[in-house]
Length: 156
Image (cartoon, rainbow, N blue to C red; front, side, top):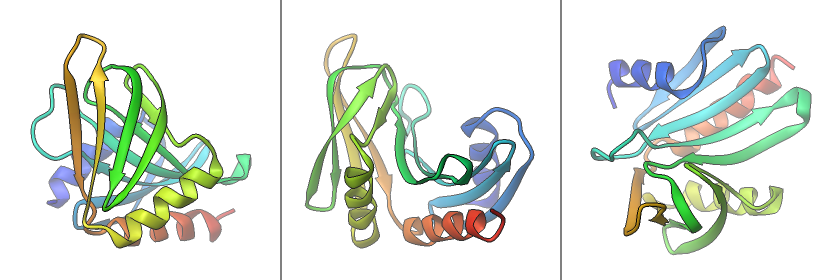
């Protein structure tokens, strides 16, 4: 991913806020927002889905949340969402175009799987019918996740 693509990703990922880049690592990047304090690793889905799709791993120090997994899907989902990371499978909680790990334990298992796999995919049935899959490369994911964790730890 080029630095320009990472900057576009930054602008699309969240509302305007004071934001600090913590680095770009292959297909992932890490950022720190100051109000409210939040650090996150983020990647954009590969290809040209109908709407931008993103994966984020976030830390919210003030809320004592670390390693929260969140996906913005390329389409609105109807029913369950399945995440596949390498050879691991996870059923996510979904509402509209958003999907999350069911709890902190599942988030930790997803992050552990991300650290050792080369790719992941998120699949669901579209609210308009048919199925869809958002695909992500995981090169740089572990480093971006670590940068986000350190970015909030050193400033909390």
